[in-house]
Image (cartoon, rainbow, N blue to C red; front, side, top):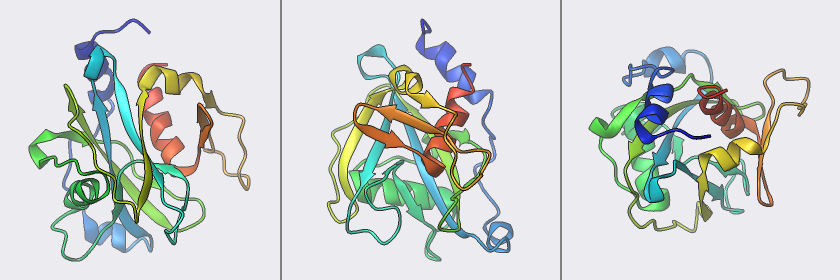
Length: 190
């Protein structure tokens, strides 16, 4: 897709909620485990790329799956945004500030483990060097956005859930909550 950086950003920002202070108590009352992720879109080499991680095989939930950096809300976190920022720094060594967040996509729920995930979004002109926390992340994937979109499959069925999708990139299959967040991004362009 032939699109410049500002047009790309505008298409996404148009779909985001500008409300980044999510009501933790309201979400807690839903019975889900609260978590948040950071969707990092950067323009290194002038093409939009997105950062994903391959989760460690040592984790309790979603081991070896592709995900966004992020994690479970802790009572010591001041907000779900703080959770995403803290976890991103821990997992891949990138430190962002709340003023770099442009909004969030719709909350996504996992199909198997009862998590409600808030996907916060940041745009960066370039990305600093990442560092893997090996207890949680086995690999960092830096993927051109439109290459990722080419691997979209909406014919995936998982336990009769209607919003099940996959994205394929190289040998990786991205599904579940991560795929549903990616679908929200893809829907900004198609």
